[in-house]
Image (cartoon, rainbow, N blue to C red; front, side):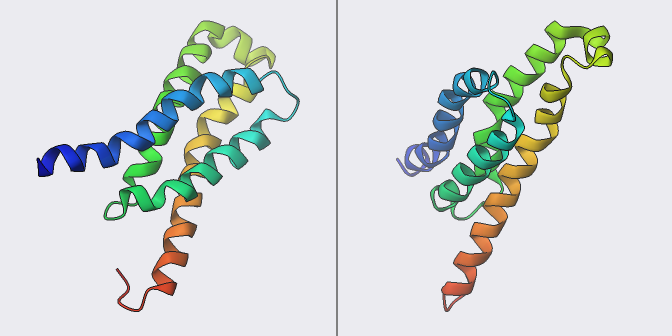
Length: 121
């Protein structure tokens, strides 16, 4: 029973990430969607730090994984020729910005939590 409860703790960020992957495709048609990547994934990762309290680094991985599969799939569909022509540079930038923003948001939130708790855990 303890394993099942522990697994539910980690399935929450994965579920949020799975529902965020199609949303990422929808707002990719907006100008400056890479800024939205940073705001959405960084903010949600900071909010989800509490759900994976012992392993703060696992939340961003589970949050980002479904969107990374979608971005990699789209980059594969575009091909190297379109990336050189500049069509997929926004998607290529998303490949680096999404995990970076998620880990930065989680790290900053974790540091603020550690500063407020007297025992530091």
